[in-house]
Length: 471
Image 1: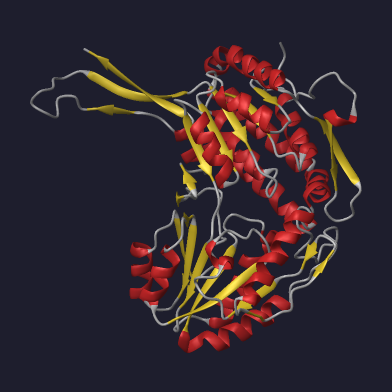
Image 2 (image 1 turned 120 degrees about the vertical axis):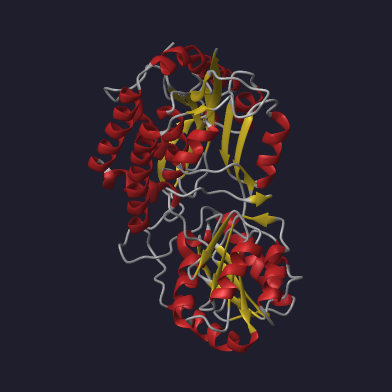
């Protein structure tokens, strides 16, 4: 059997084909026949049979493989970026940034693996021990399942494929149904590379049937998933004894302390709340503002938001394009309408045109409103008055999510306390909580997930430690 990109059953009925329509124009931009459970099982068997060759390959070959893919991405940057825009409506300037980040992620994965190693152990350190030659080393786990979302359909695939393959694993990728062509073009670069390890990567498209077949199988040793909390919960219950890495939801918050640079804070918060139309798990959703500066910050926030260009994702100047589908728009409008009924005040009137939902800043929001209690995943941000840093910390931490938080302050003591007291996987000082560098450890606590991404940290998740003692 050959590693491949599976295209489902041989049936030509339209029911077996997923046509992807542009969120912006409604035109069909790509299609991929739906796979069945048997396709998933076949892909798993291919991956299992390839593990011996993958493990036996040299690190030099695997690094060359990734760097070759990075090089091809550079050559095809504009085409890949356009495909992202076609399929998920991401503004073209941000789609280009995603391709650049993907290139960096793949390159970092290769460079990181070159320097990762085990270490020797002093087995005579305790009186019960004795002198030996003892060490540990990292070995590939075998088969990895990678399941990825629509909001970063290229770079989030890279965060799984790069570390998994360079560590000597084989992978079955199930990409988001919203961006089948993006995943296809990316996977082809791996599969057709002159340095490719035969059968090390396969791609299957499909729905819960395919996902269930992948997750419940005894073949994979690692499942790496980025997506919603409900699906993450299903995976956890169905996976059995495997390593499971989950990058799930968020309800990112920031605190604007009275000593902060309010103009800087408003500018960065507007970007953090509305980039990618708010469809980011670390999109800024809750802004806790100290009472003394609340009114001024609210004015500046509305001012900065008005500057953001909303429109066609194919124009270079566009900051915000459409939401992913009609359901997302309807949910966004229901969030806003519910908050207004509960007493919140929109600083910018809620507005929708087709699948484009304009950025919405909600003031006078209270903690008991659903708009701040749950993840909205839309271009909506809420301003909440607080009396002090202690008040803000309590409210920020009072969430089932804990992915990334931030604080704007020029008070060093507040900075130190924020690092210690905020309960999240990442803390940012004087910038938006939406800030992420691909080299950093990334992940959350509580319902925001389990495990960490970032090339070095994903490689650790996708390898096993083997301990060796020579007496």
